[in-house]
Length: 178
Image (cartoon, rainbow, N blue to C red; front, top):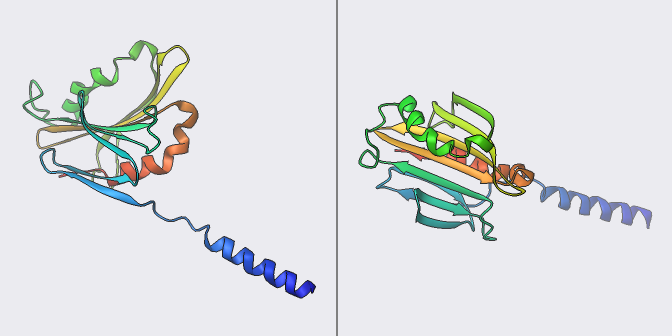
Protein backbone atom coordinates (compact mmCIF):
# COMPACT_ATOMS: atom_id res chain seq x y z
CA UNK A 1 0.00 0.00 0.00
CA UNK A 2 2.82 2.46 0.89
CA UNK A 3 4.55 1.57 -2.37
CA UNK A 4 1.33 2.32 -4.32
CA UNK A 5 0.94 5.70 -2.58
CA UNK A 6 4.61 6.58 -3.16
CA UNK A 7 4.37 5.56 -6.84
CA UNK A 8 1.17 7.57 -7.31
CA UNK A 9 2.69 10.63 -5.64
CA UNK A 10 5.82 10.28 -7.74
CA UNK A 11 3.78 10.10 -10.96
CA UNK A 12 1.70 13.14 -9.94
CA UNK A 13 4.89 15.02 -9.10
CA UNK A 14 6.37 14.28 -12.53
CA UNK A 15 3.15 15.32 -14.25
CA UNK A 16 3.08 18.55 -12.27
CA UNK A 17 6.71 19.30 -13.08
CA UNK A 18 6.15 18.76 -16.79
CA UNK A 19 3.61 21.59 -16.75
CA UNK A 20 6.11 23.94 -15.08
CA UNK A 21 8.35 24.44 -18.05
CA UNK A 22 8.31 28.04 -19.15
CA UNK A 23 7.03 28.44 -22.67
CA UNK A 24 7.03 31.44 -24.92
CA UNK A 25 3.71 33.25 -24.62
CA UNK A 26 1.46 33.14 -27.68
CA UNK A 27 1.66 36.28 -29.79
CA UNK A 28 0.10 38.12 -32.67
CA UNK A 29 2.45 39.67 -35.20
CA UNK A 30 1.46 43.25 -35.98
CA UNK A 31 3.08 44.74 -39.05
CA UNK A 32 2.67 48.33 -40.17
CA UNK A 33 4.10 48.63 -43.67
CA UNK A 34 3.36 52.37 -43.84
CA UNK A 35 5.01 53.02 -40.50
CA UNK A 36 7.81 50.60 -41.32
CA UNK A 37 7.71 48.54 -38.12
CA UNK A 38 6.69 45.14 -36.79
CA UNK A 39 6.06 43.89 -33.25
CA UNK A 40 4.83 40.71 -31.57
CA UNK A 41 1.87 41.54 -29.36
CA UNK A 42 0.94 39.27 -26.44
CA UNK A 43 -2.12 37.22 -27.33
CA UNK A 44 -5.35 38.77 -26.15
CA UNK A 45 -4.02 42.32 -25.91
CA UNK A 46 -6.17 45.06 -27.39
CA UNK A 47 -4.82 47.06 -30.34
CA UNK A 48 -5.91 50.68 -30.90
CA UNK A 49 -4.60 52.67 -33.88
CA UNK A 50 -4.21 56.44 -33.96
CA UNK A 51 -4.70 57.44 -30.31
CA UNK A 52 -3.59 61.09 -30.11
CA UNK A 53 0.10 61.33 -31.00
CA UNK A 54 0.35 57.57 -30.45
CA UNK A 55 0.51 55.49 -33.63
CA UNK A 56 -0.38 52.24 -31.85
CA UNK A 57 -1.73 51.67 -28.31
CA UNK A 58 -1.61 48.18 -26.78
CA UNK A 59 -3.46 47.21 -23.59
CA UNK A 60 -3.96 43.86 -21.82
CA UNK A 61 -7.22 42.03 -22.40
CA UNK A 62 -8.61 43.08 -19.01
CA UNK A 63 -8.82 46.64 -20.39
CA UNK A 64 -6.89 48.37 -17.62
CA UNK A 65 -5.39 51.45 -19.32
CA UNK A 66 -2.91 51.94 -16.48
CA UNK A 67 -0.93 49.06 -18.05
CA UNK A 68 -0.07 49.88 -21.63
CA UNK A 69 2.46 49.89 -24.42
CA UNK A 70 2.53 52.54 -27.11
CA UNK A 71 4.43 53.14 -30.31
CA UNK A 72 5.05 56.70 -31.43
CA UNK A 73 6.13 57.07 -35.06
CA UNK A 74 7.50 60.40 -36.15
CA UNK A 75 7.64 60.50 -39.94
CA UNK A 76 9.69 63.20 -41.68
CA UNK A 77 6.52 65.08 -42.73
CA UNK A 78 5.43 65.35 -39.07
CA UNK A 79 8.73 66.60 -37.74
CA UNK A 80 10.05 70.07 -38.49
CA UNK A 81 13.18 68.41 -39.78
CA UNK A 82 13.76 64.70 -40.21
CA UNK A 83 15.99 63.25 -37.50
CA UNK A 84 19.39 62.57 -39.03
CA UNK A 85 20.40 60.07 -36.37
CA UNK A 86 19.50 58.78 -32.94
CA UNK A 87 20.88 61.84 -31.13
CA UNK A 88 18.69 64.12 -33.27
CA UNK A 89 15.62 62.01 -32.54
CA UNK A 90 16.31 61.93 -28.79
CA UNK A 91 16.60 65.75 -28.84
CA UNK A 92 13.32 66.00 -30.80
CA UNK A 93 11.36 63.53 -28.64
CA UNK A 94 12.80 64.39 -25.20
CA UNK A 95 10.30 67.23 -24.54
CA UNK A 96 7.43 64.73 -24.97
CA UNK A 97 9.05 62.32 -22.53
CA UNK A 98 9.92 65.12 -20.15
CA UNK A 99 6.60 66.93 -20.02
CA UNK A 100 6.25 65.73 -16.43
CA UNK A 101 9.85 66.74 -15.70
CA UNK A 102 9.05 68.64 -12.51
CA UNK A 103 7.42 65.53 -11.05
CA UNK A 104 9.64 62.96 -12.75
CA UNK A 105 12.17 60.63 -11.11
CA UNK A 106 14.72 59.65 -13.75
CA UNK A 107 16.02 56.08 -13.43
CA UNK A 108 17.92 55.64 -16.69
CA UNK A 109 18.89 57.83 -19.66
CA UNK A 110 21.43 56.09 -21.87
CA UNK A 111 22.18 54.76 -25.33
CA UNK A 112 22.47 50.97 -25.53
CA UNK A 113 21.27 47.89 -27.39
CA UNK A 114 17.52 47.29 -27.37
CA UNK A 115 17.47 43.91 -29.10
CA UNK A 116 19.28 42.00 -31.83
CA UNK A 117 17.56 44.10 -34.52
CA UNK A 118 18.59 47.39 -32.94
CA UNK A 119 22.10 47.41 -31.47
CA UNK A 120 21.83 51.14 -30.79
CA UNK A 121 18.77 52.71 -29.19
CA UNK A 122 18.20 55.22 -26.41
CA UNK A 123 16.55 54.11 -23.17
CA UNK A 124 14.79 56.57 -20.87
CA UNK A 125 13.19 55.07 -17.77
CA UNK A 126 11.35 57.21 -15.25
CA UNK A 127 8.44 57.49 -12.81
CA UNK A 128 6.06 60.41 -12.50
CA UNK A 129 2.78 61.46 -10.92
CA UNK A 130 -0.35 61.83 -13.02
CA UNK A 131 -2.52 62.94 -10.13
CA UNK A 132 -2.94 62.57 -6.39
CA UNK A 133 -1.55 59.16 -5.40
CA UNK A 134 -1.30 58.10 -9.07
CA UNK A 135 2.20 57.09 -10.12
CA UNK A 136 3.35 55.75 -13.50
CA UNK A 137 6.56 53.88 -14.29
CA UNK A 138 7.61 54.22 -17.95
CA UNK A 139 10.37 52.58 -19.95
CA UNK A 140 10.80 54.29 -23.34
CA UNK A 141 13.02 53.07 -26.17
CA UNK A 142 13.87 55.60 -28.89
CA UNK A 143 15.07 54.50 -32.34
CA UNK A 144 15.90 56.32 -35.54
CA UNK A 145 16.12 54.90 -39.03
CA UNK A 146 15.87 56.44 -42.48
CA UNK A 147 14.69 59.84 -41.27
CA UNK A 148 11.93 58.28 -39.15
CA UNK A 149 11.84 58.26 -35.36
CA UNK A 150 10.19 55.57 -33.24
CA UNK A 151 9.43 55.37 -29.53
CA UNK A 152 8.27 52.20 -27.80
CA UNK A 153 6.81 53.17 -24.41
CA UNK A 154 5.92 50.61 -21.73
CA UNK A 155 3.93 51.98 -18.79
CA UNK A 156 2.24 50.73 -15.63
CA UNK A 157 1.84 51.76 -11.99
CA UNK A 158 5.18 51.18 -10.19
CA UNK A 159 3.63 48.59 -7.86
CA UNK A 160 2.79 46.28 -10.79
CA UNK A 161 5.36 47.28 -13.46
CA UNK A 162 7.63 44.31 -12.72
CA UNK A 163 4.64 41.92 -12.84
CA UNK A 164 4.45 42.64 -16.58
CA UNK A 165 8.17 42.10 -17.26
CA UNK A 166 7.59 38.99 -19.42
CA UNK A 167 5.27 40.96 -21.70
CA UNK A 168 7.60 43.99 -21.71
CA UNK A 169 10.55 41.78 -22.76
CA UNK A 170 8.44 40.15 -25.47
CA UNK A 171 7.55 43.57 -26.89
CA UNK A 172 11.11 44.91 -26.56
CA UNK A 173 12.82 41.93 -28.18
CA UNK A 174 10.35 41.70 -31.07
CA UNK A 175 10.07 45.38 -32.00
CA UNK A 176 11.66 45.78 -35.41
CA UNK A 177 11.98 48.82 -37.63
CA UNK A 178 12.34 48.06 -41.34
